[in-house]
Image (cartoon, rainbow, N blue to C red; front, side, top):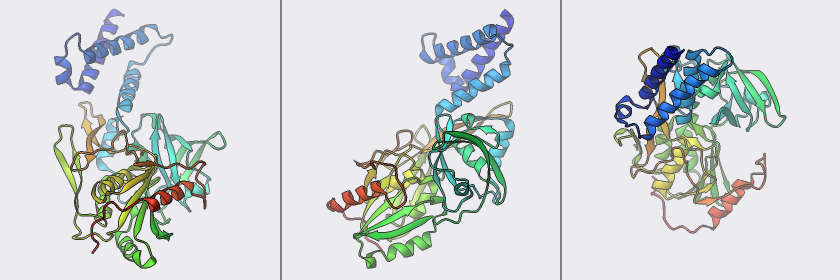
Length: 391
C-alpha cells in the first residue's frame, strides 16, 4: 500500500508539473504557493485511493483531475485523447457546415442555447433560448471546451446529432435527435425607425458583404443619418471574420492576436480605401454577444467612437492552442488573445457598456423593450465626433 501510494504521489506530481510548466514548477521552493498546491493535490489523490470504499481506477481518477484542471482554466481549456487530437488537427470537413440552427455558449458545466434560427430543425422541436445541453453525441459537455461543443453540433446536411437537453420552461429533461441543415434564415436585417437605421446581425459567419454594402449605401436615402448595430446574441468563434465587416465603417489595423509574451501572431486589417458608412454609430450588446460579435463592437468603439448600450458581454476573446502530449493526447489552452492596437481586450471580463440598458421583462416578438430604450438613448445623444467619411 505504501509503495502504491508513493508511486501515485510521484505520477500525480509529474502530471501537475507538466501541466503547470515544468521549468517554473521545478524552480519553486517549498514555501512557494504553486508547489504547496501540487503537494496538496497529490495528497488528496492518495487519500482517495486509500480510503474510498470501492477500488479506485487511478487512470480514471487522473483523467477526471486533468479534465477538472483544464475546465477551470478557460472556455477553451480541455484535455484531448489521442483520437480527439487527430480530429482537432483535421478540422471540420468542407461538407460539415450544417447545424441544427442553435447558437450556444458555455455556462459552467453546461452548454446553454442563446438563440434559435427561424425555420431551423431546433425551432421545429421547440428548443428555446435558455435551454441547457448536458451532452452532445454522447460526450458530456462538462469536459468539452466551447470549441469542441461547437464542432460536435456541426456536420453534413441531413445528418443528425443527439443531445441531452434540459428544457428550462417545462423543467423537463429529454434526449432529442436534431437534424443538421443548411441555414436559410437571414444573416442580417437593416431597417429604419425614426431617422435611425438599425442593423441587426444574426450570423456573422454568413454575413454577405456585397449585400450589406448595397443596403448601407441606401440608408441615407431612407432618411437615416445614424446607425445602431444590434449585436445581441451574435456568437461566432471566428473573430478574424470581422475584418470584412469592420472595413465598411473604418480602415487601418483593427485587432491584433498576441501570445502571453505580447508577440503579435496575426493582425486584422481593413483593406477598403474608404468606409461605406460615414455617419454616427452605436452598438447594442448583451450577455450572449460573444467572440466575433465582441470583436466588432470593440472595433466600432475604438475606431468610430461608437457608444455601447446594453449589458456586459460574454468575454470570449481568446484563441485555443493545441499542446500535444508524449502519450498522444493533448491539451487545449487559451494560448492567444485578441485586442486593439492600443492593447484593449475583452477576454474573460467582456465589454462593459457605456450605458447600461435593460428590458424590464423578457424579450418577445414585436415587443423589444431593450432596443426601444437603446434607440431613445441614441436619439438623445449629441454628436461629439463624426465618423469616417464614406466613399
